[in-house]
Length: 234
Picture 1 (cartoon, helix red, strand yellow):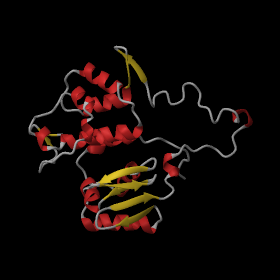
Picture 2 (cartoon, one colour):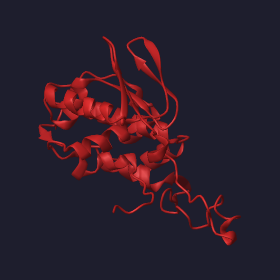
Picture 3 (cartoon, helix red, strand yellow):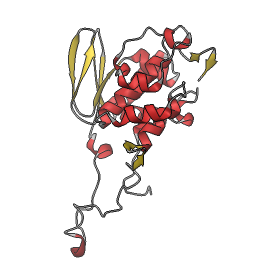
Picture 4 (cartoon, one colour):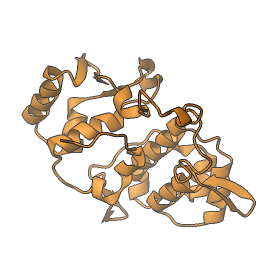
């Protein structure tokens, strides 16, 4: 019998070298990946010149994108999505522009689960975490009088291919009013930039310049081999 309970899987796990390894996904990994890609709250997505509303637990993708992520063929991808639909794990809607996937009962995977009958001495504490609860989720570090979220900044710094002027980058990071959605946009924008023609040819700005200019919002033209930077695969 499987153990019951709740664990957190941070979206940053997708940036770990194990997850980013060039491999064929299993069905279990593909299912986790669908949950990763779902929006944790209602959002909007720019599709061409039109804003498209995306509800919590849903995301916009395409079969081609999923095939590339999972290293699957078209038939296997469609068969897996149909399997998930038939088992009422997802709802899939497609048109000529996009595919929208909604995770059924998304709150099961996103929301913290609590027991239905807490013990009497816990009645007044279950809604308030103890002072040390989740202290490792967001650790605020004092560095040169700048406050920054160590977990997310360190992930950004480790992924940024040009390691110059770190303290300037820390200060630039500290000026950003960070939210989970914004952090996701920054990491996704960095990923697009790393695959762009400009960056693969070696024209990479300093990280502080990139952050101060909100360059994660830039549009990029990907290279034919988007896994190369300065002739090296990442």
